[in-house]
Structures are given as C-alpha cells and as structure tokens.
Length: 230
Image (cartoon, rainbow, N blue to C red; front, side, top):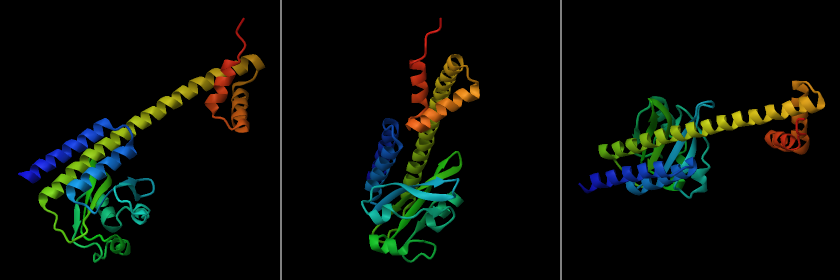
C-alpha cells in the first residue's frame, strides 16, 4: 500500500513539474531527480534521440559525475538504451558490467553501477528517447517499478514533444515577423534609392554582415530613419 501511494505521489510530482516548468532542460532535470529519489537510483538519466544522426545523447541526469555526463552518444540500436529505442520496449539488465551488449562496462565499474532498467519514452508510438535507472547493487526490477518508470517516461515524452512544438511555433512566428520587417525595409530602400527588390535585399544583407548585426536590427534601423512620404 505504501509503495502504491509513493508511486501515485511520484506521478503527481512529475505531472506538476511538466505543467509548471517552461524550460525543457529544467523540466528534464527535475524529472530525473524525482525519479531517482523514488526508484532509489544511483544514477537516473534521460537520453533523447537525434533521428537525423541516428544517435542517443544524455539530455539530463541527477548524477554529478563528469565521466557519466560526458558519456559519448550511442547509436540507435547499440547497447541497451539503443535497443530500447529501436525495439520500443523496456529492458532490464541484472549487471551491466557483465552484459556483453553494454557498451561502457568500464565506466559502469568506475561509477559503481550494477543493474539497469531502461524504458522507452513513447509519444504516438514513436520512441523519442529513454529513461535509465541504475542501481549500485544487484536488483531485480519488479513489475510495478517497470510500470512506474514507463508511466513517467510517457508523461515526459508528451511534455517534450509539446515543448518542441511550442518552440517551433515561436520560431515560425519570429521568422514571419522578420520577413515582414525586411519586406518593409526593402520597400523603403527601393523607393528612396530607386533600387530593385534584389538590390535592396543585398544592401540589407551587406550591412548586416559588415556591421555584424542581425538582419532584423538592420531592417528596423532603415525603417526608423526612413524619410516620411510626401
């Protein structure tokens, strides 16, 4: 009963973290910290998939170990975490230092790591990464532990995708605003200097490069100094 209550509290804490934290990096760090405390993890980490490169890289961990934090990226399909993403299923390993598929046994020995539970972060049936929970002593992960980590992973996956969508939308909005400002500045240059559209754009581009200023600042300066129409 106590374990069930703790699991529900953990999911509630993760949910609160997701809804109250704006920044992805901070959110992921809070999730691994909460998860490590609940699971009793020696190290808990979130690895995100870079689909373009076919790699997994560490995005967050509560570990202070520089050696672990700087662990090289894994190829998807490689080692335990890479297989979890490829196969979209949880994998438990009794002892990573003795598992032939685990790529970094020396690092695991150095960090005093033993058992590993790695679960996929699924969003619309797509694995966008994994959550890893390591123990410092041999441990058999129970079904409710696996279920809890899977629930956390799926909550995190949806939050990550939503955050990425918001960031993409903001970038698109910013790009649209930039285009509007540049178009207005081009119009002013075309009118005042009798330039073609292409020539006006080149003027803006050249000023941006020569002055090492963003195109938007250059365009806004042109707008700000434009002669009023008669």
